[in-house]
Amino acid sequence: MSRVGLRRRRRWCRAIPWTPLGLLLCLVGASVARWVPKIPHCPPTCSCTKDNAFCVDTKAIPKSFPQGIISLTMINVGFTEIPAGSFSHLHLLQFLLLNSNTFTLIANDAFAGLTHLQYLFIENNDIQTLSTHTFRGLKSLIHLSLSNNNLRVLPRDLFRHLDILTDLDLRGNSLLCDCKMKWLVEWMGRTNTSVPPMVCADPLEFRGRRIRDLVPEDFHCMSADFAVYETFPFQSVSVESYTLNGDLFVVFAQPYTGICTLYAWDDMGQAFRKHYNITSHSAIHCKPVVINNMVFLVLAQLFGGSYIYKWEEASQHFVKIQDIDTARVLKPNFVETFQLEDDLFFVMADSSKAGLTTLYRWNGNGFYSYQSLHPWHRDTHVEFLEVDGTPWLILSSISQPPAIYKWNRSRRQFAFSGHLPDAADVWMVRHFNVSGTLYLCLGRFIGDSHVLRWEGQQFVEVQTLPSRGSKAALPFTVDGRQYLVLGSDYSFSRVYLWDKEEQRLWPFQELNVRAPRAFSLISIKNQDFLFAASFKGKTLVYEHLMVDLSAK
Image 1 (cartoon, rainbow, N blue to C red):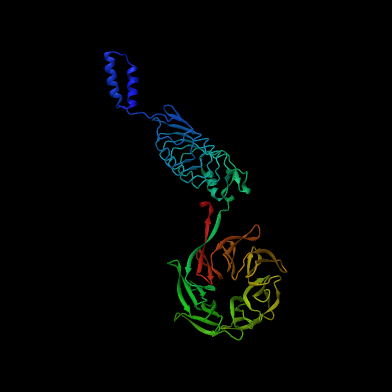
Image 2: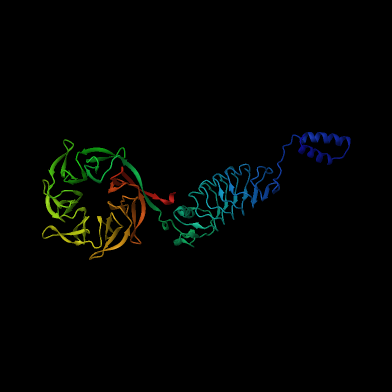
């Protein structure tokens, strides 16, 4: 017989008279006691009654309690974490108080098995974060107090499965009322649970405000991300697009093979597929032009002359139809197209010391030289824009600040009008409009880039952007958000986002593109893609994705 059995026998025997009959009862009673289930003792650090236990200074959650315990209090314990299933052996528990401890972590499913628990108090601890499934399984919980901890945020849907919760206390926490807490505002607006007033600690705009007074519209939680969507196994120095008969095509100029490559959008496969190659020697820019449902392609080459091709629908081939005058354009670097007074033009920037940047006009049968501009200045880029209703061309060059040409309506030609002031070493100029205000971005290869604003009589610098090594820039708009991407040969390319309140650009995202030479925004139905042509690496396609920060 065990020692416990001997003690029970002695207590039994002392309680009856010492007679022959009593001796018989002692022997029989001890035998019966041997088969009665043993009742676990109250843990040494706890005080127990029939249905409750009170524990102080315990080093771990005891595994044995008197049967039938429905109330447990644990204070000043000697551990900081509550692992999963810590109380699963107390399945009848209805009341659990864990106040005045140093808990820092409560694991998922820490209270698994407590299907009868109604009251849970975890106050005056050092809890900073909780997991979404911390309270999973507490289907009978009606009162939960997490007051006076160090909680900053609460995970989304923390209280989703607490269907009959009637009281919730979150007071005494330094809550950060950002997008991650928007769900709590929405939940409080539709729940019947009683929540005592609590205030936001941060951010500054909400500091001191009662959370119940906030509405979901107070939070601006929609952000964006440029995620790599597709990678092409070739280098490129230009990227352009066009549509024909409802189909979308993208055209790349490849520097090492010298060819123009066309890709078509595969709607079924949701990807771009190789469609056609135009063989050339040294393609620097492949510019498609669509006129009356006819596709022409201006193929600018560094060497060997430049040409114009036309797509023949019957043979499904591009056919060369015209040579570009090599006496004018010796070393093209960029091609810009635009419509002006019912006429279609393209202008080819010449980067040689002896060439002429030249304007060409469509006459119904082909493109013919219309006007020579800016001779012998090694032009790198041309930008067409309208300023107060007047068409402008801004020519960037290696040798001098960007030159401004304005359209003379009576002479029907562009006339030189001056230079952009204090703008040396500008590789390209790009323009964009925000709320009716015109801005220029001056992309520079040496030094910082600049943002200028039109003030009615002149452009005034309003911002400087670090962009050392930039030979590519593109302002573009997606979903009402104004972006600017600046390439860099020496570091990551950077996307900037326009701040409407502060009227300036802020860094938004970095893109890992090696030596970018061109960017292009191409939209297909509900998808927006940013193409990045790389001179030293693979050509990349980024998809613009809208992200709800409150959903994380």
